[in-house]
Length: 358
Image 1: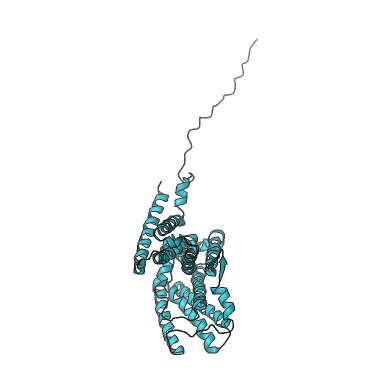
Image 2: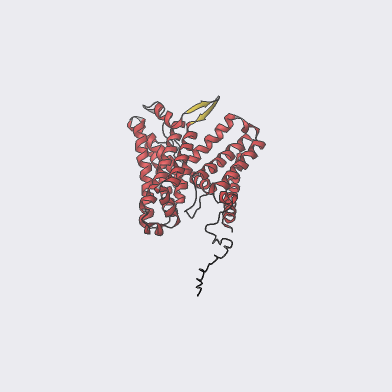
């Protein structure tokens, strides 16, 4: 009797799994580094430091009405700094933004006064002019391929000369006439330059517009296809064009957005003071660009946020008004701004290197 032994199937034991290998792309970065990678974190810390500094150095800052003035000053800078920041994220910047504000205000004022029309006619025409200036800037940048620095420098000089020459030609003065008694002035003033009471403190309406515009800009940048286009054309426009991004439309629309901001701030100035000085606005473009840079927007484009310039504008307003409340010589304001700008650039550089360090 033979016994047949059936061979048992071989059992293979899977090799013990060792520690998981990661290539660095899927590893979870520490929370602190992820926060530092955000462009607005550095300027937020800087804004807190400036606020605490003047809270100690200038006791009047602790008053509610003083803070309302600081926020108002910040809002007039911040409303323009937002579209300027978006334009910088898109890889361009606009040196004509400061005088474009005055161009818009002069257009609305002189057109309405000289033609004796309702003030809203001048407001609408001024909007068309501001958007037209933005379109012209964007179109020339796209069509010629020249740096936006050169194109908008030319626009800056043209607008500066036209503002002064046309105002003197029409009004025989360097300022426009008072329009406070014209039809529609009261309505327009409520829209662009009114204020409301909060706990006994008068708050300017521009603060509300500033925060609303910042929220809209943040949503557009982070949640819409247009926001992706802005980052794409700012990072590398040729690569963006290769994947179907409408580079021409995106860049021209960003310049027109700056024109819209110039129109809005120009209307606020006009209906706050009832008249406009034709020589104003020179130098303001550097304030807007500086607020965006302090807010974390790179001059090379492709990076930044809409929240960062909000804190950057707040720092400007805080320093500008804080020096007055502290009783210091306001001549030091520009020196403070220079220190802030250099500090912000160095902090942003340190933040980026820290965030990208393995």
